[in-house]
Image 1: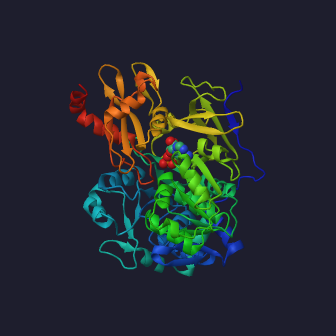
Image 2: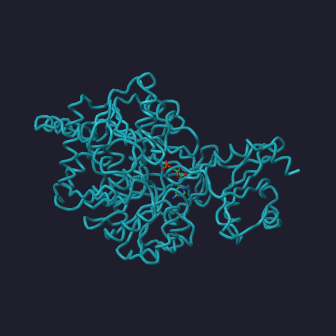
Length: 549
Ligand code: AMP
């Protein structure tokens, strides 16, 4: 059997362009076409207008003394300023540091100090987060590198400049100086640090170059066959590469329009945006599509303008995919798989891959990317055999900022990024993601893949969703735990689950602990955090052990 290795080819070469040059080339070709529509702010900018706003803000950042290579944080939900800041910082060669809007003081302090950020752009507040108050509470003592804080607002706040005020500092001379800096940048310069979502607990700053993200965004949109006539609805967060790379750079490299429905995901706003703006494409993680399909107004909506989009970040249940295609008209919807450290996408389905392929696999390899699947000894496994997925190519990050040790752990001497994901490649090049190396449960020497038990329990008629993970156990090392969400109106007990498993799956896979829950701990991007569930179980462990007898 041949070894599990694939390498993407394409008639389209990689482009060697900075983020700023990518916007300039959209302006050259599509100046008057819509670029940025932000519905909750009532903003509508053509490519020429977006570029002018970017030039002003870049000139303003220059005026306040920021220099090429400086790190500048952005801590805000989705808005027009986020997109303008993305391009303005790139024009000056400032490394934009994406900060999760859900972070609180301790996390903010950690990431700003980790990268030595000189400046921070921040929203005033969002939901229960008072960003300005949190920065104030840390103060200069805890944030020794931070010199400038720019609040997204028309008016300055005591001690903070305003976004509009910084743009107002622009002069012709500063604009020219900022353009001159842009012309001297290399596509290989780091331009963005993205702190990974933390499904494993500890934020690491994946450092990406212009070349990494311009090309990845471009290929993600190309596989959806984007043109300047497309209008993409982007409900995913900008701080994550799903928003700023696959969304923003995907659109800009094709002259398509970006449509932001809201500050953060809200199914009703997404449906409004698609309907009113006649969007042709929609992005989301599976849970977002589930919420849109389940919205009370869904049936009354005209979503007939939709054609394509991306569903990514987690496996998509088949019934959801069927409804996305039939009820949302997204006949050409694609599935993507990737991770922040690889800019992000490595695999994507084709619009014409059959339904079975689109639900059971993440499609085929992206252009100019190599992937192999290896066993625990690092040996490449044959096609059809599960192992860890390794990625190499233009899309692999420079490393984790200021963390050579973690970088060495992640990227080996051969340039392979170790994803920590378990996958199976077939001999046609389709890839199935089967779990996480770290999620694997080892119970008394038996390897257990949570995904397998999850798929089995999904078959139970009362089970809406199930998450399986390992919890520590004195005797076996680890034991299997299930957190189950029941379908509405269904009532079952632990015993019913055990009876359902009995004789159907090996005894060691039958959950030792079963909990019925209303929701799972999740990251903002909809990734379920098993480590949080594990911690919760560990806390109640003595009690649960007593109950289990
Ligand atoms: P992030 O760096 O936040 O984008 O998270 C990357 C991780 O999300 C990957 O390492 C996978 O574990 C998971 N992931 C991304 N896309 C998919 C997908 N289509 N199916 C299953 N898991 C996925």
